[in-house]
Length: 459
Image (cartoon, rainbow, N blue to C red; front, side, top):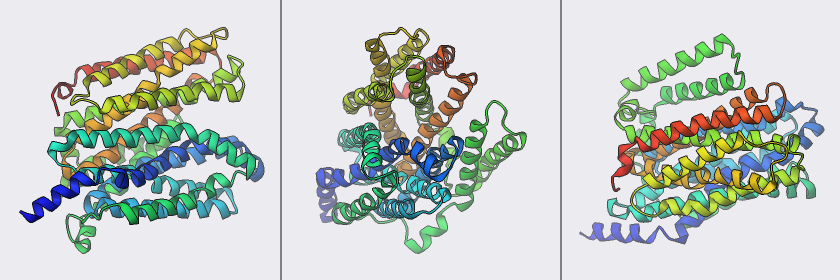
């Protein structure tokens, strides 16, 4: 009885500021690092003598590391305890800051971006697993509000990344965009040690390592890596790479079906339709969101004739709208209508892209861009809440990590689609091709959302 009372008092007290402040700080580091680097790419290319295609790996390698690292971190959080993984992420972020600050060659910078992707990627699945540890079945609303706060904080810092990066580059230099991670990582570590509640692994530490599915992790990493290579070389990926992707995927499924405690629980996914549909919605949503970021930006400057700063300010509207509407998804016990609204907004924005031209008023452009803020904010939070609710409690960290992999998969597909649309140069025709591609994604997204019967039930 005493243990039950103690457990209840811990659960009801830790979802306050002492828990959420360090969690929010850790979660936002991934968002700010994903956009802050944009302002440093040109100076890095100039100072180190690296061409534009090579310097783009500073973006891709972080996406790749995050896409692989987040489900791995989630699985480790489920196995060893969320607090341990969260703190380890802070250490990796600090190490990445040192590597980028003193790295003498471009290869060191790529390594630093990979490490920062792993470190910042550990925070979100560990944070969600920690919230699950501290809440019970009757506290779903508190957990949903906490998830809304985490995602809103991430959206705010996603918006703040480019201005912060520009300030650092202009005042200190491009290495400051790497160096800033050292004190931030130390701060995450210090706050985590001071305020985050201890979490015990589900098994003894010595035996827990034996339960880590190393073959599954390696096959998953190979599959995601090969997928990125294939997408970067569309429409003519090497046959060897394509064949390697297929073989890796087949081996991943076959091996994970035979493991008692798999890293990727394919049996659970086959039986959990609601979870798979949530992942599919995230891929489709972020295909359009990142497609707008990658595809609309060059057209605004080349086709519409806006300056770089003016184009940046217009795109900030998407993050601003997302920040405002994100908390709305955490209200109520159903996520059906927030997801339907976001699908309709994405569909409307995508269709509007097919009508834009060089004479489109700036106000209209701002409205169109703002429509994509709904899937970026409300849709993201609603889908994360669905993942939190339908994933098995003992696998919520790994399931959350996979949801982030779904987002980055959407980003990687968006990069490929944008390259195809602008194969003959950035122009109005290419923009309209992007609009129709996103429209198809919007139609599928709406159908998947309306057809998901699990969204009609109360949590």
